[in-house]
Length: 306
Image (cartoon, rainbow, N blue to C red; front, side, top):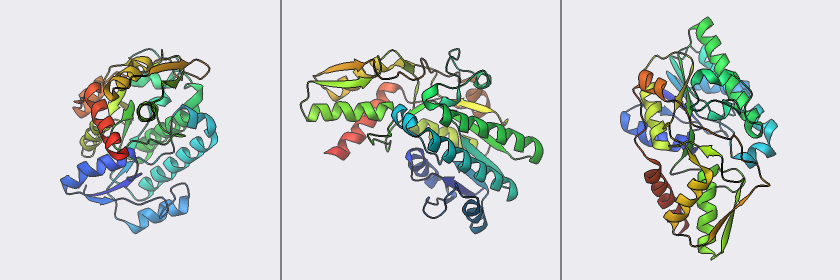
């Protein structure tokens, strides 16, 4: 399985994955969206016609934090469902040996027992602020399972916890919680502001996975045959947004105050996944603790601001 197509190769996960796979002597196919728009069936098919593809790692996505999800729910649903449908269908048509599909922890129900078990994905509707994104991904899990049953398509579905690390998205209107907090607190420090406003009351909890650990899980999946069911990739440890914000504040040595604005939504109350299936099926366990990952992420960001 030498010829690997990576969709979304210029994105956060893609850039980190390329660093890893470049060292393993794979032939990597890394198209950009201006070359092949995966939302268009004919352009997606042309991508498969133009290249000999053994394995697809589907990372391409339209995604973002709570604000971005609330602003563009229709686009988040449409872009992700159409890209996924087109890529999976062409894997079938061109008899691709393997597809690794990146899901989302947003596909879990809003009120889900913690830790989230893979079977719980089907027990309810996702949290409202990111439901269109979560349901689009969730629908594609069903498609992959159906294609496995009818056509024998070999696929692995990885569902990572909230990701962070070098090359993350730090854009104000679309970043996730860790890059958003890093940027806000760093700017407050450099501009000598006395306080930083943070959305929500800080009580919601999240589990965070360092991007290089996800890259390892993806790499392990390339040569494995797994069941076509979601597999959680995470740490099994959660932290409140308030605790997280103060960790970032301490690492950046910001002397101001943090104020939590309860007028803004918290999002899902808790997120923390059960990681037993990843250990059993992929022999995967995370190696980067949160403090180490935050220090590396902040160092990467600060060096690009100096």
